Image (cartoon, rainbow, N blue to C red; front, side, top):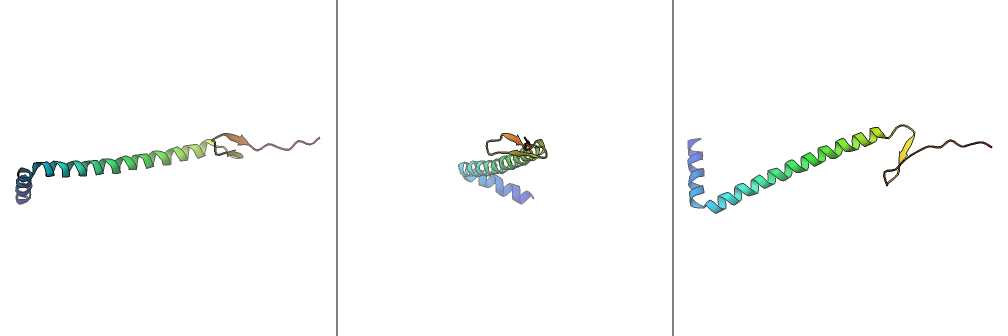
Length: 75
């Protein structure tokens, strides 16, 4: 473990700009993956709640408007 830390510090001293860019790239990649995961989870929950809000015997058109089935009237 000491060897690993010593080598890491030496590489930071040799090329500080490259080290900072590498760390920034890794941090941005992890942030992007986390953000994508949160969006996917929120979309799944939103779709699940929307399905629950549409009751039985009802439809939803592409515009999001809900309409219920109408019974035919006899004259």
